[in-house]
Image (cartoon, rainbow, N blue to C red; front, side):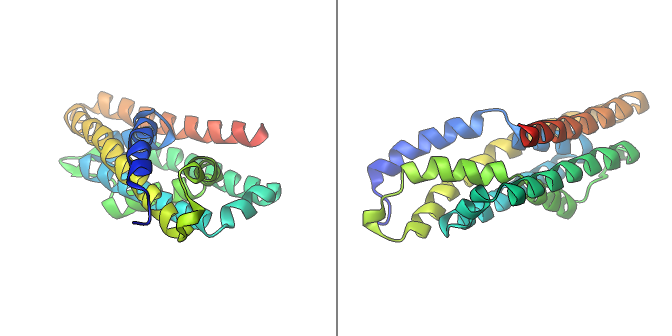
Length: 207
């Protein structure tokens, strides 16, 4: 077996604890659920998972170390992420949360947004480089395959947990958005989440 079963058994609860910790991905899915409904929330969670798997693959083949060793590239990617989150906040303010019973955010767009937000945060790949190698055994060979197995565990857990958070927000938003005043409040709440995520990413960039 590529991964030692005991190591995998130790990794799963550690990954689950990480997935359950509120963070940018969870807040992003929550905001997408409020803004676009359950389908958009699940699609956003799937996009985040796809971005995470890309980061795992890049880390496994060593590109993550290259990003970490080039501060200019690291900060450029991060500022792109800041700009994209601010764009999402602006777009959210201009778009009604719901039109009748139809989500105002297409699942394909929610997937794309989740993917781009995850990929444009280089902190994700650095975290992967710090966390997953603790469980990788080079003596077993196939280091990339081990990275992908552990990354899949994290990604699948995130897909379920972030998707559940987004579904809850989507159901709540669908009910509340029937009132025009509440709809505006939900729009501002979603835009605020995107703005705060951008501010956090910008602050990390300065630090």
